[in-house]
Amino acid sequence: MQTNTVKNESGGLVDAARLLPAVWQDPACRPSLRWLRTNQRNFPHVRLGRLVFFDVDQVKAHLLKKAEKKAVV
Image (cartoon, rainbow, N blue to C red):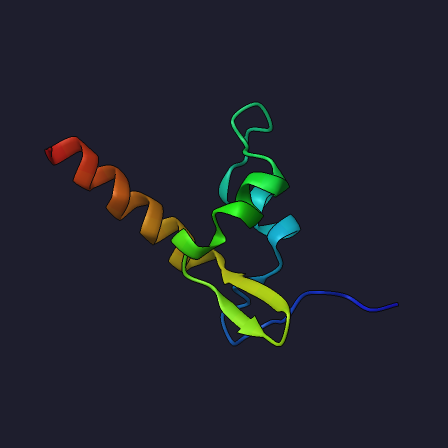
């Protein structure tokens, strides 16, 4: 069985399906997997061939930074 998860030293690289519950804990507020794949270019990610992985900590930091920008404007 092939798994689409790669771990680095911090254990932060995950595939899109595992990123969603890691970043958005509340299922009612969680975007869909289709939305994430459509907007993945807006998030920090790593490509290995056709596979795409996300660092959970980097995505959380990116979302916080984006939210702070909106709050200032």
